[in-house]
Amino acid sequence: MPKSTVKSAPNGLNTRTISEGFTQSEISDMGCMQRWNYRYNQLLEKPGSINFPLRVGTVWHDAMEQFYATKGTRVSVATLQLEQHDIPSQVDLEAMKYWNAVLPMMMEAYSIYYKSDPIKWTVHQIEREMDIRYRGIRLRGKIDIIGTDKNGNWIWDHKTTSRLNLDVVAGWDFRFQFMFYLWLLSKEEPMKMKGFVINATKKPELRVKKTESLPEFAVRVREDMIQEPDKYFFRYQYIITKGQLEHFEKNVVDPKLDILEYIMAHPDDPLAISLMQNKNTDECQKWGGKPCQFIELCQHGESHRFLYREKEQKHAELDIDVAE
Image (cartoon, rainbow, N blue to C red; front, side, top):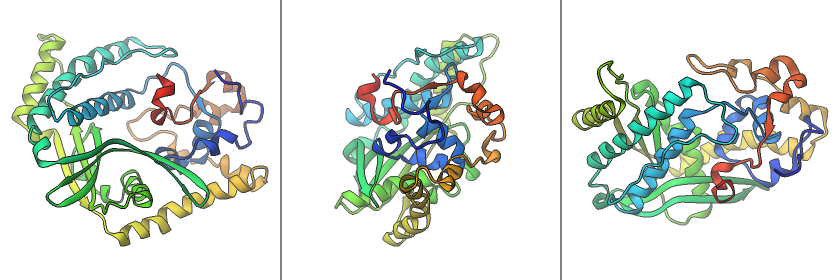
């Protein structure tokens, strides 16, 4: 592990915060600046906690990459594995068994439902990484797919979600992540883009029966997805105009970067430090979700720092060659 750059001065600005750039997920975390400070500036994470939505999403994205790279001819779904610092409970171990059985069946159903995609779509790039300078700030991202259909050029974003209804998809045409990717691409790509495609797959709500094994249940999930695809698959093309992108830049991107720019220019200024430590307690726990992993630090202060370790990378999802 590299020598710590933040533990000796937890309230300061880490040089890696600037040099390794900012992603949409990082900027989105600025809804609570203290959480951003812990996660992306101090590079802290809590060993032992297993983020299954993130890991399931990562495996799903890998399967999507294979499906479109091979035009649907070959997909091998990766197996969820325990990582070095995981401390799994029995519930975690059962969840791993569940997803390792179910994900391949979900992928089979997807492959059947969208088997015509390689004919309808011309895929130009898969997992396109972007790295630009805007206002002197390094901004980074990764687009799942850049492709063309009969209506024009689009970027894609693959999503797995536990719910799929009008409440979930409402406002997706202005969701920061999707707009940010399209905006980033507009800064470095001459190809005119029509908008973005949300390619969402709903996780099954079916439950394992007392009389069936996990493999039998996974097959039942596959059959349900094939027989009732509208319950599981949602794909929509959101048309985005040049005016919408300009509005997004001026009214969404720039105000967020104003904060970062001030902190970067005045890292020792009391106001900058106050901004970095500003807590939004509404973000501590969402309804029905787990508490924020940094809640002990916020509640009890530096005496609970021993619960956390420093990550080797700020954006492991963009530096896979190092992480692997």
